[in-house]
Image (cartoon, rainbow, N blue to C red; front, top):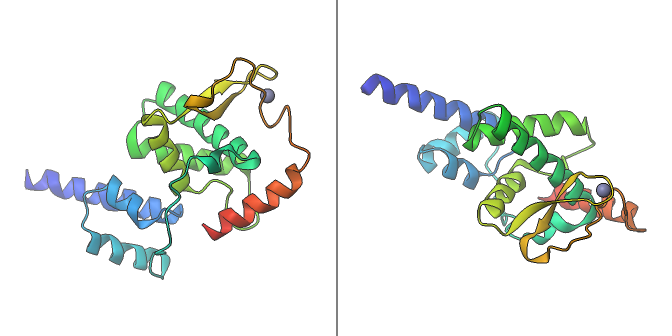
Length: 180
Ligand SMILES: [Zn+2]
């Protein structure tokens, strides 16, 4: 039994290191591992060379509805659902694998990715809580993130019907993502 718990702990440390490298906030590490806050803080500083940010966590579902964040969030959810369904992964493993694939798909970007792993993690919780869900676009057939209570029969996504000020939204979203 003692051996087993050591192996578990090693696995949790590995998961925590991966999450930190992907940009996860401390709260995510606390929720997804059973390591103590002290150990996680130490681990975070060792991996990142700095203390974790103490800023507010992104609690709102509204962020996922603006133009560029919605496209990125929908891409992440598509990847996540595919992996859960076809690759037999779940929980934090599914989060890490999906997020790595999301980063590959969106390619190298200047600065921070639009969707941070912490936001992706919150989004999965919002899906579990049935506050958000995916709905098909009637024009392209892709699936996109919407508020559960805002369902309508003829949804058109942000790629098929980009808002005229999409360029401005992109910049705003990137600076917001960088600030997060
Ligand atoms: Zn569409």
